[in-house]
Image 1 (cartoon, helix red, strand yellow):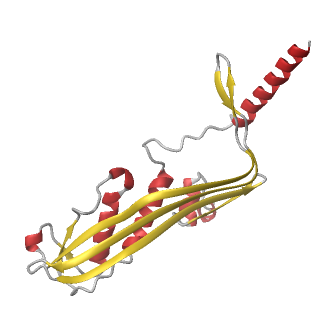
Image 2 (spheres, one colour; image 1 turned 45 degrees about the vertical axis):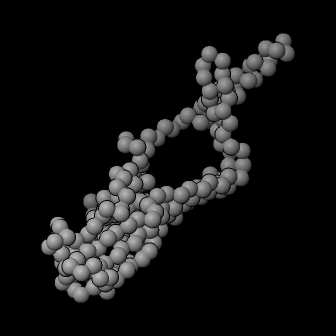
Image 3 (spheres, one colour; image 1 turned 135 degrees about the vertical axis):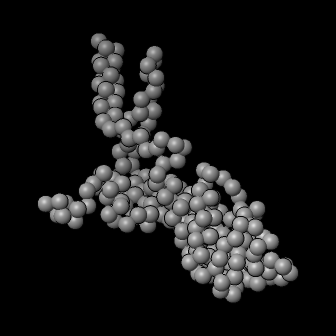
Length: 218
């Protein structure tokens, strides 16, 4: 009888755990990275690129040499190069496709373009429970306080030199860009801090209609 009671109690706990832990399933990504991870990398690149202000004559034709800039699609490096080029265009320089047509060569390099993460939990973490012939289920996490911190980091350097003589004209950097997405909760009440998106875009990403859009629709 005691054994049957233990089996019944164990089964009840497992069923409750499955019910509580399995109410919602969210698939965050179709490719290898989530949209949020991509935004973290691209935002960090935006903030670093905006600091590139060379002391080179305005109007110079510049060839951007990316041979020292790591090419990795997963880490948004092509986007980062494009942002550096856009910054040079915005500052009044011309871009050319080859070194022999340039007045100045800009050799760009990246020291970092990635995401760090840290997680803090005060409470009871989710615990995997093996079930014979079924697999493993996890108990629900019981968090008094929880914080998940994600930080995107970009570090760029640019050396500008004369395309004809090779003389140094300027060195910019290293310049740094930091993006962040922090989510905290106390007893189930959560809040976020982020610099990835303006408020309206963040609401749309979360599937919400911005308040002013609702007003205009009325």
